[in-house]
Length: 250
Image 1 (cartoon, helix red, strand yellow):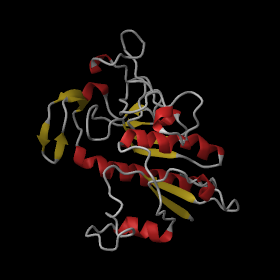
Image 2 (cartoon, rainbow, N blue to C red):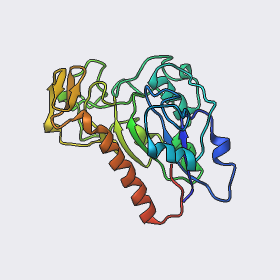
Image 3 (cartoon, helix red, strand yellow):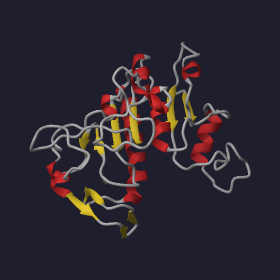
Image 4 (spheres, helix red, strand yellow):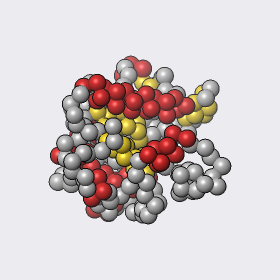
């Protein structure tokens, strides 16, 4: 199984499709707050040991010259997702909450759509922060910027999330673990029961940390977000291999 692991990627389509005889499987890592020299694959003097990532770098494809279009996570993620500068989206800066409309404009091709068109099975896992739309159970219309979470109709799909952006499978944290809502969406649907939603106060709850007041599932545990994402990612890969479609994945 050929694998290309891409770190901090902004313009890689030429490399991805250079060998048309066998398209590689691709894993893109897009990390907040990780320095270029934090990984020994890029800095042998690093004091942090990341053996699995170092192995991916050794066996996959490693880039040494990449440039972020923004110093903030969400605009950079938008650029990776669309190939556009951040100011070519709906708003030129900031981060975009899960109910504040999509930053990605109609007609802008996403990475997921591009890879699907190239014959890939696609998955997105992790923080999104690119906007979206949820609907009021009362009015049936998109909620306003100021909303009551108890009025959100979670029987409806989260619109304009990854499952609408070309990803066949998605396990999404709309704001990561840095702020509300403290929930996950599986393929656009709330991964949990709406009746389990509560209002969280800032503080530490065992190993979990709530940095900002807001709603979320009562079983939310920020310390489990990473392991949950790993489980979902490996589950996607396992299902893909077992299906035996012959398609590569990204």
